[in-house]
Length: 312
Ligand code: TXA
Ligand code: MG
Image (spheres, rainbow, N blue to C red):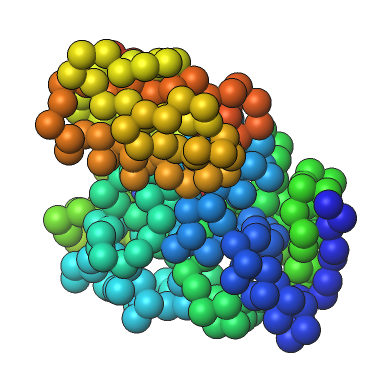
């Protein structure tokens, strides 16, 4: 695919919004780094973010919203979270909060977690795209997996050129450093990722001071099913629920047609669903180990592993 680069003006944003509504990912500037945005309510749109980034694993993504009103429809805000949002939004602060199940956010966005990361960016391009598409936008940094975060449209083109349809160009981002992430639970504020807003600043309005730093990717928080999980299964064993793929039908299927984007979009929903079935174990058909299939296999392997070590 050819990657178009358009100025982040009204016409560019209108074209980006059209692609978002067609479940395509689009690179868009924020005041921190460029993000690769997709409709957070569409599992397939979000799966295409992973496909484009070539990310070998599913990490929960930040969902970008216009502001507090839209955010409160997606997550539960207590007094501490509301105070932080009122003070720092729009801006480079991400809040991790309890997810409202009924909000319609695709489960691949949160990697099946009961919490969600929300951010209201001050950048007019991101704000314009949220307004024009009418969707909350999941967006990790717009770089290929393992590459550094992009602060210019050219960085995005270098790393994701030919893998995404459009980059909105608004020049250099102002912070060049990803947003500060804090988790707010029961009034306690914990710093998960340092960023442009310091822990000290946040302490000023936080009910409790941030007490620990967890580097991204080291969060022991990914969803794992409660039941034993068997991989590369060609048929269900006794008392097993089989999740199929391609030619292996199973009790349900990740994708009858063997489509990895569809499979990634359905993965967490089907694992949750399997946990609720009246059977002792879960089996999953083989998933090809290429492209998005690597991320799906990584997630399944973690879910199948003994639960002693935190996820990396
Ligand atoms: O500045 C930024 O934050 C940029 C721009 C594009 O908004 N985005 C960004 O996204 O850096 P990403 O996907 O590269 O980093 C998101 C981080 C990950 O470390 C992830 O583990 C954490 O947010 N995260 C997301 N949801 C979470 C959750 N429910 N609980 C804990 N951590 C979460
Ligand atoms: Mg990143």
